[in-house]
Amino acid sequence: MNFDVFLQHISNALSLGSLYALIAIGYTMVYGILRLINFAHGDVFMLGGYIAFYAVTVFFMPWWVGFIVAFGLTGIFGIGLERVAYKPLRNSPKISIMISAIGASFLLENLATVIFGGRPKGFPVPELFNHVAHIGSVSVAYISLFIPVLTAALLTILLIIVLKTKTGMAMRAVSTDLSAARLMGIDVNRIVSFTFGAGSVLAAIGGVMWAVKYPQLNPTMGMIPGLKCFIAAVIGGIGNISGAVLGGLLLGFIEIMIIAFLPTLTGYRDAFAFVLLIFVLMVKPSGLLGRNQVEKV
Image (cartoon, rainbow, N blue to C red; front, side, top):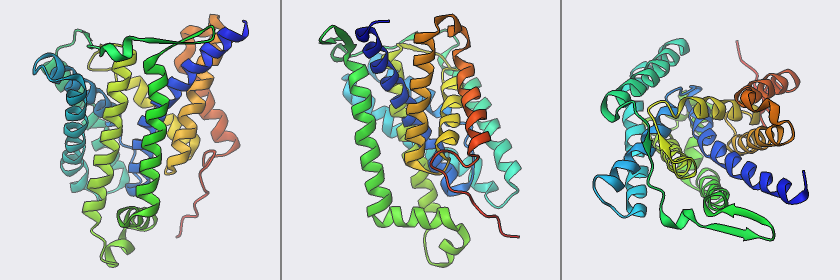
């Protein structure tokens, strides 16, 4: 492998890792607030792609308007999902709410199959993202350059919200102790809704960018990426936003580089995430940037 090909793989890894990071942030935000693994997050990612598809192809919206509509509607859907599937079980045992999350995931996938059809649909890629940039002898699609920049911008905005605003302060209080936060006068329901809404918007952005990069939609498209992004969040330290980004980038780089250097293992690319998860949990169970938590009895 020459240096130019290596740089090509670096750009692909950065783009894929940034997509994983976008989705992993949603997992880690919800877990940080409710200690809930939202198994339906990958399906919210799928829904964002489909809404953008219909906004552009059926309602003939300009692509950027369709994308914004998809982000907004998916965010509202995420809030509704929390109200219907999770809020009534908030005081129930953790296993109940986890089963509800798994049920919501299967329900969304089957509803999507009925409503959108099981046949894959080609996503209309905007002309802007069809261009290819030539950096020296390396050719990089515009979308591969755009995704890391978008992820960095969204991460910066999210960290400013979490660290510099009253809403972010309330989110940190709820994540530390939900009952105490309620006693301090924090509107816990509003904070939980905001968290689900923000996480769903990020999932929709990830879903649309994924559809632009790999222009095909199907009702189960969120299953494997969702699972990998959950693993990325655990690797980085679930509950830690920076950890989710680190986990996503790490997963993207390892996946692309192993295939680049060992092409005979291409068929096992989805297994790399699980191997990495087992290794990290054996060495540092709380994740790379996670903190050990002491459970009071």
